[in-house]
Length: 240
Ligand SMILES: Nc1nc2c(ncn2[C@@H]2O[C@H](COP(=O)(O)OP(=O)(O)OP(=O)(O)O)[C@@H](O)[C@H]2O)c(=O)[nH]1
Ligand SMILES: [Mg+2]
Image 1 (cartoon, helix red, strand yellow):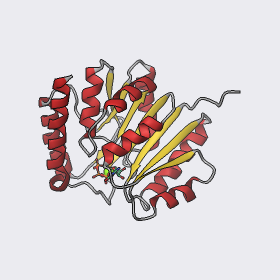
Image 2 (image 1 turned 45 degrees about the vertical axis):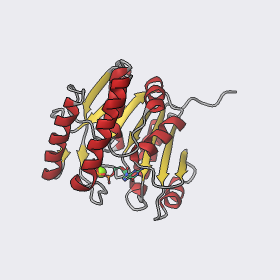
Image 3 (image 1 turned 90 degrees about the horizontal axis):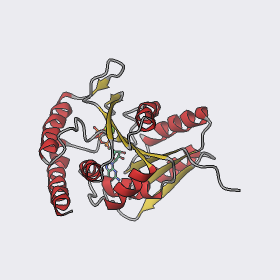
Image 4 (image 1 turned 30 degrees about the horizontal axis):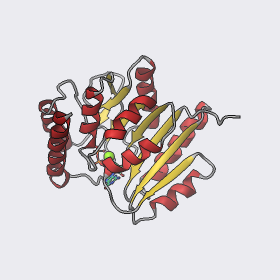
Protein backbone atom coordinates (compact mmCIF):
# COMPACT_ATOMS: atom_id res chain seq x y z
CA UNK A 1 0.00 0.00 0.00
CA UNK A 2 1.29 3.44 -0.78
CA UNK A 3 1.34 6.06 1.96
CA UNK A 4 -1.46 8.61 1.73
CA UNK A 5 -0.42 11.54 -0.41
CA UNK A 6 0.30 14.66 1.57
CA UNK A 7 -1.99 17.46 0.43
CA UNK A 8 -0.12 20.35 2.04
CA UNK A 9 3.39 20.91 3.33
CA UNK A 10 3.95 23.89 5.60
CA UNK A 11 7.59 24.91 6.01
CA UNK A 12 8.48 27.22 8.89
CA UNK A 13 11.92 28.77 9.18
CA UNK A 14 12.72 29.30 12.83
CA UNK A 15 15.55 31.09 14.54
CA UNK A 16 15.06 31.35 18.29
CA UNK A 17 11.28 31.00 18.08
CA UNK A 18 10.67 28.99 21.28
CA UNK A 19 8.15 31.59 22.41
CA UNK A 20 6.41 32.67 19.21
CA UNK A 21 6.20 29.40 17.31
CA UNK A 22 4.31 27.04 19.69
CA UNK A 23 1.00 28.98 19.62
CA UNK A 24 1.17 29.22 15.82
CA UNK A 25 1.98 25.53 15.55
CA UNK A 26 -1.09 24.73 17.65
CA UNK A 27 -3.17 26.86 15.29
CA UNK A 28 -1.74 25.01 12.27
CA UNK A 29 -2.36 21.55 13.73
CA UNK A 30 -5.94 22.46 14.68
CA UNK A 31 -6.57 23.89 11.22
CA UNK A 32 -5.42 20.76 9.38
CA UNK A 33 -7.04 18.36 11.86
CA UNK A 34 -10.27 20.19 11.09
CA UNK A 35 -9.77 19.67 7.37
CA UNK A 36 -9.03 15.97 7.67
CA UNK A 37 -6.48 15.90 4.83
CA UNK A 38 -2.97 14.51 5.20
CA UNK A 39 -0.45 17.28 5.78
CA UNK A 40 3.04 17.82 7.11
CA UNK A 41 4.73 20.64 8.95
CA UNK A 42 8.47 21.05 8.56
CA UNK A 43 10.18 23.34 11.04
CA UNK A 44 13.70 24.23 9.97
CA UNK A 45 15.60 25.10 13.10
CA UNK A 46 18.30 27.47 11.95
CA UNK A 47 20.80 27.10 14.79
CA UNK A 48 18.44 28.30 17.54
CA UNK A 49 19.87 28.50 21.03
CA UNK A 50 16.62 28.89 22.96
CA UNK A 51 15.27 25.34 22.79
CA UNK A 52 13.04 25.96 19.74
CA UNK A 53 13.28 22.33 18.58
CA UNK A 54 12.32 20.90 21.99
CA UNK A 55 9.36 23.25 22.33
CA UNK A 56 8.21 22.32 18.82
CA UNK A 57 8.36 18.60 19.60
CA UNK A 58 6.42 19.07 22.86
CA UNK A 59 3.76 21.12 21.11
CA UNK A 60 3.47 18.73 18.17
CA UNK A 61 2.84 15.55 20.15
CA UNK A 62 1.67 12.96 17.62
CA UNK A 63 0.94 15.50 14.86
CA UNK A 64 2.93 15.17 11.60
CA UNK A 65 5.56 17.76 12.47
CA UNK A 66 9.21 17.27 11.58
CA UNK A 67 12.14 19.34 12.76
CA UNK A 68 15.11 19.75 10.43
CA UNK A 69 18.03 21.05 12.47
CA UNK A 70 20.71 23.06 10.71
CA UNK A 71 24.18 23.06 12.20
CA UNK A 72 24.63 26.83 12.35
CA UNK A 73 22.63 29.96 11.56
CA UNK A 74 22.45 29.73 7.76
CA UNK A 75 19.82 32.43 7.18
CA UNK A 76 16.12 32.49 6.38
CA UNK A 77 16.57 31.80 2.64
CA UNK A 78 18.79 28.79 3.31
CA UNK A 79 16.37 27.46 5.93
CA UNK A 80 13.31 27.81 3.69
CA UNK A 81 15.22 26.12 0.86
CA UNK A 82 16.11 23.11 3.05
CA UNK A 83 12.49 22.78 4.15
CA UNK A 84 10.92 23.21 0.72
CA UNK A 85 13.25 20.62 -0.81
CA UNK A 86 12.38 18.13 1.95
CA UNK A 87 8.62 18.70 1.52
CA UNK A 88 6.47 16.14 -0.32
CA UNK A 89 3.03 17.79 -0.45
CA UNK A 90 0.98 18.38 -3.57
CA UNK A 91 1.03 22.04 -2.49
CA UNK A 92 3.95 23.44 -0.49
CA UNK A 93 4.07 26.68 1.40
CA UNK A 94 6.29 28.54 3.79
CA UNK A 95 5.04 30.69 6.64
CA UNK A 96 6.74 32.93 9.19
CA UNK A 97 6.99 31.49 12.70
CA UNK A 98 5.34 34.46 14.38
CA UNK A 99 1.94 33.75 12.88
CA UNK A 100 1.54 37.23 11.41
CA UNK A 101 -0.77 35.59 8.85
CA UNK A 102 -3.33 33.14 10.30
CA UNK A 103 -2.90 29.69 8.74
CA UNK A 104 -6.54 29.75 7.59
CA UNK A 105 -5.43 32.33 5.00
CA UNK A 106 -3.93 29.36 3.18
CA UNK A 107 -7.39 28.96 1.65
CA UNK A 108 -6.87 32.14 -0.32
CA UNK A 109 -3.57 30.89 -1.72
CA UNK A 110 -5.08 27.48 -2.38
CA UNK A 111 -7.91 29.01 -4.41
CA UNK A 112 -5.31 30.69 -6.63
CA UNK A 113 -3.34 27.44 -7.06
CA UNK A 114 -6.47 25.44 -7.82
CA UNK A 115 -7.40 28.09 -10.39
CA UNK A 116 -4.13 27.43 -12.22
CA UNK A 117 -1.42 29.56 -10.64
CA UNK A 118 1.79 27.66 -9.79
CA UNK A 119 2.94 30.24 -7.27
CA UNK A 120 0.58 32.14 -4.94
CA UNK A 121 2.09 34.88 -2.82
CA UNK A 122 0.47 36.54 0.16
CA UNK A 123 0.32 40.30 -0.18
CA UNK A 124 -0.08 43.25 2.15
CA UNK A 125 -0.29 45.61 -0.83
CA UNK A 126 -3.09 44.16 -2.96
CA UNK A 127 -6.32 45.81 -1.82
CA UNK A 128 -9.24 43.66 -0.79
CA UNK A 129 -12.08 44.78 1.48
CA UNK A 130 -12.15 41.27 2.98
CA UNK A 131 -8.70 41.54 4.57
CA UNK A 132 -6.98 43.77 7.09
CA UNK A 133 -3.28 44.53 7.34
CA UNK A 134 -1.99 45.86 10.65
CA UNK A 135 1.60 47.04 10.27
CA UNK A 136 3.90 49.58 11.89
CA UNK A 137 4.17 52.75 9.77
CA UNK A 138 7.96 52.69 9.40
CA UNK A 139 7.80 49.12 8.14
CA UNK A 140 5.12 50.07 5.61
CA UNK A 141 7.37 52.83 4.33
CA UNK A 142 10.42 50.56 4.21
CA UNK A 143 8.30 48.01 2.35
CA UNK A 144 7.28 50.58 -0.25
CA UNK A 145 10.87 51.62 -0.86
CA UNK A 146 11.99 48.02 -1.04
CA UNK A 147 9.27 47.11 -3.50
CA UNK A 148 10.33 50.05 -5.65
CA UNK A 149 13.77 48.48 -5.86
CA UNK A 150 12.26 45.08 -6.55
CA UNK A 151 10.39 46.57 -9.51
CA UNK A 152 13.66 47.92 -10.90
CA UNK A 153 15.51 44.61 -10.66
CA UNK A 154 13.02 43.07 -13.02
CA UNK A 155 9.81 42.35 -11.10
CA UNK A 156 7.56 45.26 -12.07
CA UNK A 157 4.34 43.34 -11.40
CA UNK A 158 5.09 42.40 -7.79
CA UNK A 159 3.46 44.59 -5.15
CA UNK A 160 4.77 42.82 -2.02
CA UNK A 161 7.74 40.52 -2.42
CA UNK A 162 8.44 40.11 1.28
CA UNK A 163 5.31 38.67 2.85
CA UNK A 164 6.32 35.44 4.63
CA UNK A 165 3.34 33.47 3.33
CA UNK A 166 3.89 31.90 -0.10
CA UNK A 167 2.61 28.71 -1.69
CA UNK A 168 3.77 26.63 -4.66
CA UNK A 169 2.74 23.66 -6.74
CA UNK A 170 5.08 20.69 -6.20
CA UNK A 171 6.62 21.30 -9.62
CA UNK A 172 7.24 25.00 -9.03
CA UNK A 173 8.69 24.34 -5.56
CA UNK A 174 11.13 21.75 -6.89
CA UNK A 175 12.27 23.94 -9.77
CA UNK A 176 12.54 27.20 -7.85
CA UNK A 177 14.07 25.98 -4.59
CA UNK A 178 16.41 23.68 -6.50
CA UNK A 179 17.95 26.82 -8.02
CA UNK A 180 17.67 29.28 -5.14
CA UNK A 181 21.04 30.55 -3.90
CA UNK A 182 20.17 33.54 -1.68
CA UNK A 183 20.67 32.55 1.94
CA UNK A 184 19.38 35.59 3.80
CA UNK A 185 16.23 37.70 3.95
CA UNK A 186 16.53 38.76 0.29
CA UNK A 187 15.59 35.24 -0.86
CA UNK A 188 11.93 36.03 -1.66
CA UNK A 189 13.08 38.25 -4.50
CA UNK A 190 15.19 35.51 -6.07
CA UNK A 191 12.26 33.09 -5.66
CA UNK A 192 10.09 35.48 -7.68
CA UNK A 193 12.83 36.08 -10.27
CA UNK A 194 13.13 32.31 -10.75
CA UNK A 195 9.35 31.93 -10.97
CA UNK A 196 9.34 34.51 -13.74
CA UNK A 197 12.35 33.00 -15.50
CA UNK A 198 10.74 29.56 -15.61
CA UNK A 199 7.41 30.97 -16.73
CA UNK A 200 5.36 29.94 -13.71
CA UNK A 201 2.10 31.80 -13.32
CA UNK A 202 2.28 33.90 -10.14
CA UNK A 203 -0.84 35.14 -8.34
CA UNK A 204 -0.50 37.88 -5.72
CA UNK A 205 -3.28 37.42 -3.20
CA UNK A 206 -4.41 39.74 -0.39
CA UNK A 207 -4.05 38.10 3.02
CA UNK A 208 -4.81 39.15 6.57
CA UNK A 209 -1.59 40.13 8.27
CA UNK A 210 -0.84 41.68 11.60
CA UNK A 211 2.44 42.78 13.04
CA UNK A 212 3.70 40.56 15.88
CA UNK A 213 6.08 41.72 18.57
CA UNK A 214 9.52 40.15 18.78
CA UNK A 215 10.68 40.84 15.22
CA UNK A 216 14.29 39.97 14.47
CA UNK A 217 14.36 42.05 11.32
CA UNK A 218 15.29 45.71 11.33
CA UNK A 219 15.29 48.14 8.43
CA UNK A 220 18.86 49.22 9.12
CA UNK A 221 20.11 45.91 10.47
CA UNK A 222 18.73 43.75 7.69
CA UNK A 223 18.07 46.16 4.81
CA UNK A 224 21.59 46.68 3.39
CA UNK A 225 22.32 42.94 3.29
CA UNK A 226 19.03 42.38 1.45
CA UNK A 227 19.90 44.94 -1.24
CA UNK A 228 23.22 43.23 -1.75
CA UNK A 229 21.54 39.84 -2.01
CA UNK A 230 19.02 40.97 -4.61
CA UNK A 231 21.72 42.63 -6.70
CA UNK A 232 23.69 39.40 -6.70
CA UNK A 233 20.53 37.47 -7.59
CA UNK A 234 19.92 39.91 -10.46
CA UNK A 235 23.42 39.25 -11.81
CA UNK A 236 22.89 35.49 -11.60
CA UNK A 237 19.58 35.83 -13.45
CA UNK A 238 21.22 37.93 -16.19
CA UNK A 239 23.74 35.11 -16.74
CA UNK A 240 21.03 32.49 -17.25
N1 LIG B 1 16.22 30.60 9.20
C1 LIG B 1 16.19 31.79 9.75
N2 LIG B 1 15.02 32.32 9.93
C2 LIG B 1 14.99 33.49 10.55
C3 LIG B 1 16.14 34.18 10.96
N3 LIG B 1 15.74 35.33 11.52
C4 LIG B 1 14.39 35.33 11.45
N4 LIG B 1 13.96 34.20 10.87
C5 LIG B 1 12.60 33.77 10.62
O1 LIG B 1 12.02 34.60 9.67
C6 LIG B 1 10.64 34.76 9.94
C7 LIG B 1 10.29 36.20 10.04
O2 LIG B 1 11.00 36.77 11.12
P1 LIG B 1 10.40 37.95 11.95
O3 LIG B 1 11.30 38.19 13.10
O4 LIG B 1 8.94 37.67 12.18
O5 LIG B 1 10.54 39.11 10.95
P2 LIG B 1 9.67 40.38 10.94
O6 LIG B 1 10.55 41.54 11.17
O7 LIG B 1 8.48 40.21 11.82
O8 LIG B 1 9.30 40.43 9.47
P3 LIG B 1 7.88 40.76 9.01
O9 LIG B 1 7.03 39.71 9.67
O10 LIG B 1 7.96 40.64 7.52
O11 LIG B 1 7.64 42.16 9.52
C8 LIG B 1 10.39 33.96 11.22
O12 LIG B 1 9.90 32.70 10.85
C9 LIG B 1 11.76 33.87 11.83
O13 LIG B 1 11.96 32.76 12.67
C10 LIG B 1 17.39 33.58 10.71
O14 LIG B 1 18.45 34.07 11.02
N5 LIG B 1 17.35 32.36 10.10
MG1 LIG C 1 7.07 38.85 11.51
